[in-house]
Length: 119
Image 1 (tube, rainbow, N blue to C red):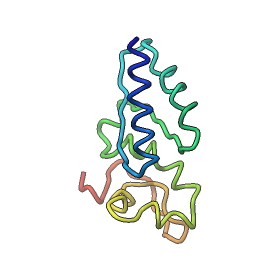
Image 2: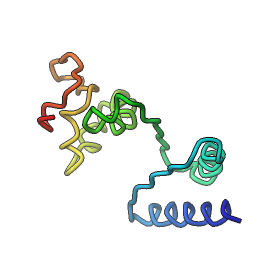
Image 3: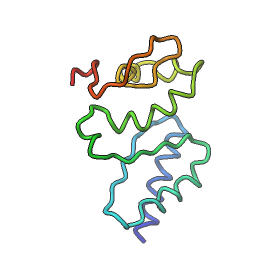
């Protein structure tokens, strides 16, 4: 019964996103409680969305926006023309924390510290 309620909530969030209302969802559960199967079920009803996922580790606690880097860097590394649109507005604040530099930018070595965040 709990799984049906969770899927219903997730489907409502997807419907809202399709209507232009964004949201973020963080799924946390104890190990072996079915998180992966829940996310697999969501992927089947969200095939019109770009799905990204990440698993945080010990290092991510110390790195500002560490988990965000895991989510966004693969996407940013594959885009050229869309990059400016993806980083428009508030999202542009995350670019200095990204290892995936713009193709025209001078590459800088990856750092454990985010200079934009002063952390």
